[in-house]
Length: 381
Image (tube, rainbow, N blue to C red):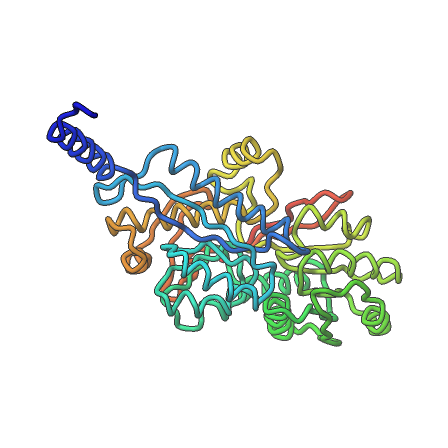
């Protein structure tokens, strides 16, 4: 038979509950930031680079300690795979909403960013794309839509200007991969090409899963263009340039940021030296904090920056800056705070116009020499 005093036991339990309650009151609030990009498929390498950039920012912020409105906050990155597929992109967007993220860094591709944006708009959740360049994304009237890169309305004309003024081209054949990104970029290029007096000989479409371009390229060869503009990603753009070389087509191949990656040299082989591509932003080495960011990134992930990592990194910091200014981690308060963004980070100074686009943008043009990407020029927008 126990000889314990029931009253004493109850007192000890009560005291323990008080201690536990006090600890709970001071526990960090966990706040989820969503991230969506292709982590499988042909664009997985790019998508993982984007996720790594966002993850590095989250880890740094947590290590320094974050307090919002007097409450300690721990960030959690809710990273999801949209596989560069529009249907999967909308499913992932809804999952992130259901996961109660307060903001989203993503999506990577215009083809997933645009359909997903309606879901975030309906939920009142800020979406900052680190890489989607199709102008339509921020022209839909959604107050939730932002991006930290220039648009194809700037990138396409920059490529056309280079073709005309630097390469001296008089005629062009255009091919796109029929995605929102590839087609959008090609269309913007074509508009400016016509304004500049370039003759557009043809505009053909393939798809983003294609591996054989010989039929289109044989047709293009017969047109004798001075340049070929390709709207699409490196997974198809690399083989496209390689097969153009195999068919003895001497025209330079121009493309956007989808082509502008180290992997292009592997996919195109020696034909990479015939490619000129653009990036909708400053080159990493010319970003104010670019070299230091690159060192931190490589130390953490033991690999080189592909392209989008610094843009995703700053996007996280911009979201956190909105939290600080709002003194809140609620999605609605973050959204209300976003128009006042004036953040200085790796990319330099970031401010947004009324559409959610950058007030200050830049387009960087590159070519390849011996398979190595080389900066040609930077065009400030």
